[in-house]
Image (tube, rainbow, N blue to C red; front, top):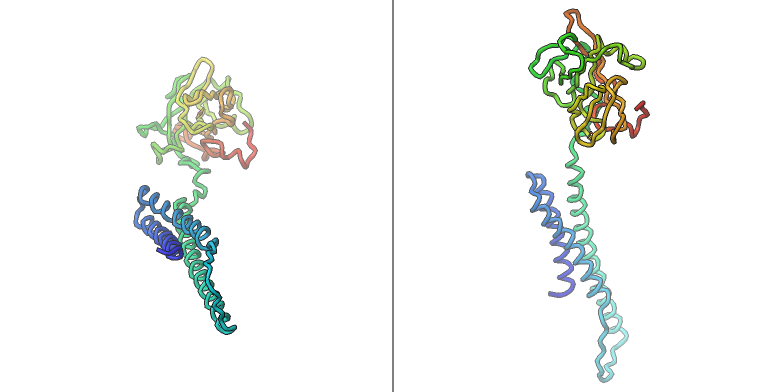
Length: 279
Ligand code: FES
């Protein structure tokens, strides 16, 4: 195989591998096959460029002693033109192959962008809570503040979104006189029933432990601790933001209802990257 054929074969192999990579992705994908094809696509271009540089751009000149064979000026001119023509056409051919392989590889490399899926839109800013949603337990039972003893906790959901992870809320009953909530928050805890998002603002673990002695919520993942009486501000651990508080009131039948969705996004603190919020 001549060097030119070797370079052409490497570029062609790369282009075919890139096209095959796109096809495999479109028909469902297979990580192992895609990995092999990506290696062939990148390796083909690399090998072709290496052979081109070594064997075609740096051809050694070998001279052989022989008696003088004079050519006419016309013959010399024709020979030079033919050599230049061959070099030019070979270069053009290889450059076109290289561009084709590069274009195919670019198309294949767009696959990760296609895999990103649809944009989340407002999904990270809302949960299942709506104004008027009744607060229910995991069995769908609505709850009155008096159903909870002081110092107890229950996981609750909106009545039409039981089990929805982003709406999971810890409902705690404390003595109203002990609460030290600021601003509007003071009106969101009827009869000492107060609700906080169950999703830790550090890395999203469920905040599963309530310590009644000092009214603290604890996240078992990295020990972040939140003060229930002061709006769940973090008092220990890596969490930098309070647990969002659910605005709650009581409906005409005496059951707890949400006055609105959480006032800020629940879960890990991507929110803090672009917004200033009180911690
Ligand atoms: S996820 Fe809760 S402290 Fe890290």
